[in-house]
Image (cartoon, rainbow, N blue to C red; front, top):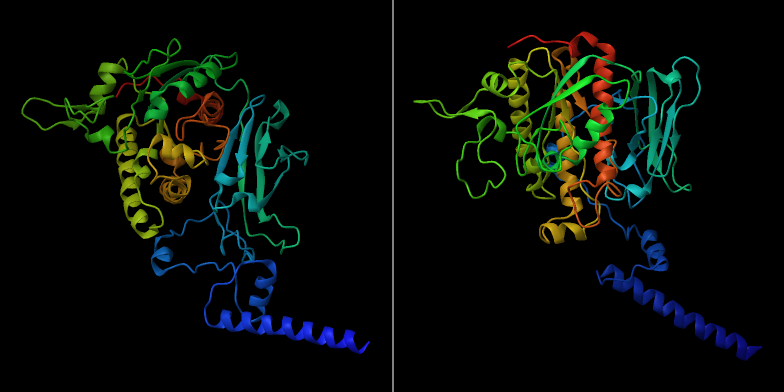
Length: 453
């Protein structure tokens, strides 16, 4: 027994010596491995093995105070290493839907976090009349295919919590939006003249073809698309003004005949050079020459991705500075069309975030680009764009949250970071289609307008 006790005391002294040595090394700043055991020891002396950097003054300055759709409730700070201390949320003010057409909200598009799978989203939508629960919540989205009985407006509550069931389950972020379901036959037999202005995503024509197919189904208006760009892959009647590489400013200013870096179009379709004058935008002339002297009733602006793609990551103040200028460019183009077509409904599409897979950025562009770099600037852009154009329906200006409905995982081909596949294109088309149907349902006289500028 004496030998056993002596052996145990020697072992305890040996282990105790190691613990003392490790503590001395730790206090001297020597890096220790981050096993759970060492992490526990570190926490005893106030050391966090997974520190969360505090926001810099520049980062605080850069984050615009963008209100949620409804006044946000007090939120609990996250104690979990994979979530930010404060979760930024940017809910749509409303989403549009039509019976028999699937509409979705993808959760990772609504909040700003590097680890979206660290969140659990709870969505509650009750029918405004019957109280019946609408839609279903999946792991990455809330989805609804309305019926005719769902036509109307319904409140949707969205709550984000830590996915860890052992963590504090108070809301990290929450808000409300409105689901607007238009009748399936809204606008039947009326005229709808549509102009789509965009970048390479529109230039590809995939989503515009999908929109044309939706508008061609029974119960829809007699649609006419306007524009000078008819791609070889375009379905009958499908035209637009979408060009690869275009940014908001280009449509009012671009006049570079023969420019080698403008392979798709070196002069904006809206810019003309009159004798003795500098090139300038002339939308009334465009309407006369390319729209049969009849302005569009609907204009969709699918722009912004090219504007922000080159912005640096991890520089929020610098990004906010440039995005403010980009949003002002957007305002100028929207106002130009508001002046040229005063009764037209104008949709500011919020562009979808690009693919979540980093390697495809290297293949398509270069190693300096990544999803996180784009996402930082994309989310800030969505906040500032929405802040600029929200609550302006009285001006016939609408924010269409195409980004909220888009699947950034399955919506892109495996080899393309920024141009949707057929599935993603159909989601963009759904955002446009349901918005048009909502306008036709609430303002049918608009679709039959034939006034000249």
